[in-house]
Amino acid sequence: MDLDQLAALRTPEGSAALAAAERVAGGDPLAAAAALRSAGIPGGLAAAALTQAELRRRAAGKFGAAAAGMFLTRAGLEQATRRAVADRRAARLRAAGVTTLADLGCGLGADALAAARAGIRVYAVEADPVTAAMAAANAEAAGLADLVTVERGDATAFDATGVDAVFCDPARRRAGTGQRVFDPNAYSPPWEFVTGLAARVPRTVVKVAPGLDHALIPAGAEAEWVSVDGDLVEAALWCGELAEVPRRATLLREKEGPLLNASGSKRVPSYHLTGTGAQEAPVGPVRRFLYDPDPAVVRAHLVAELAADLDATLADPSIAYLYADEARPTPFARCLEITDVLPFSLKRLRALLRERRVGRVEIRKRGSALEPEKLRRDLRLSGDEAAGLALTRVAGDPTVLVCRPVPPGG
Picture: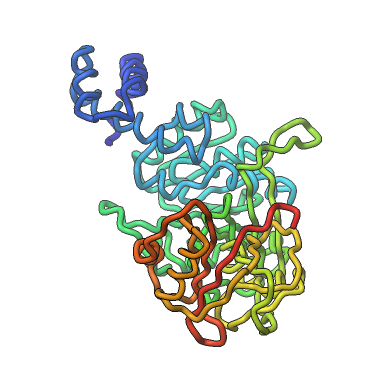
C-alpha cells in the first residue's frame, strides 16, 4: 500500500469499499474480488480494501474489537505489540509517574495508543511514511489524536530531552523484504543507539525479541519476558529508574477473562516471577510430579526460583523440567503426574500405550531430538484413552515420561 491508496481508503468511497470487503473477507479471494467489482468498486480500491479487511481479521487476536477500525500492514501487524501486553506496559509507566512519552519507531501505533489510553501524552516517530500515516490514522480512529502526535522521521534524531520517558521498539525486519533480523546490530535504530538511550533518558523501555542473548542486557537493566496464555510473545528492557529487579517473567492470561480494577476498568490477569536469573536449581532423581515451566520463566532464567517455590529439582542440569513429590498449584508451570519412566524405545513405548488402549497423546519435549508428529505417527495409536508423553533426558540418557494431567488445584 502507498500513501495515495491509504488516503483513498479514508474517503467516504473508501469506507464503503472497506465495509463491502469486510462482508466478503475470509472466503475465496477471487470470489471476494469479483463481488467488489460487481458492486462498482474500482479494482485498485477493491484490492486495497480486501487487503485491509483480511489484515483486520488477523489482527482481532492481538487488538480485539479495535482491530476493525485500524489500518495495517502485514509486517507491521507481525511486529505490533498485543493489546494486553501494551496496556500492562502503559499502566506500569503511568504508575511510575510518566506523563509524556517518546515512542521511537512506533510502527502502527499499538504501544502509543496503549500509553494514550493510560493518560500519557505520546510523541511518536516512525521512519516509514505509510506506516507513520497509518499510526496517525489509528490514533484518530481510536479517538486519541489529541494525545498522540505522529511524525515521520529518524528516531535517532528525535530530541527526547522534553519527555519523561522513552519507549523504543527497533525494527527487526529488513525494509522491503520483510525478512527477520536476528543480529541486534542490524536493528533499526541500531543496537548501539537503543542501549545508549538509557544514558540520556533516565526512564527508558526497549522492546526486544524473546530470544535476546542475556549477555546483551545492559548492566542495571531489568529484563522482562512476557507470555500470553503460554505463548512467549516478547521481551523488554526496563532501564534506569524503571528497573525494579534483574529478571522478571510476566504471564498474562487472556483466556481467564478480564478482571475489574477498583476504578471499574478491565485488565487481563497477570502473574509475575522475579529473581536474579543467575541461580541454579538443584539436581535430583525423577519424582512423582513433573512441572513444565512457562516459556517466559525459562527464557528469564528463573527456573531455579520456581524450583525453590515448588520444592522441586532438575533431573538434568541443562533441561528445564522440574520434578517434585507434591503437586502444588502454580501459574508458572503445567503440572503432570508421572506414571511411567522409560528409557526411550519406540517398540516398548508402543506396546505400553497399546496395552492401556491409549489413542490420544499430548507430546511435549525438552532436550530431545525426536519430532513429536513423526513419533505420533510411528506409535500407530488406537484406543479411547488419553495420555501425556514428555520426551527428555535424565542423567544424559534419552527418556520418555508417561504422564497424566493434574487437575487445577493439585
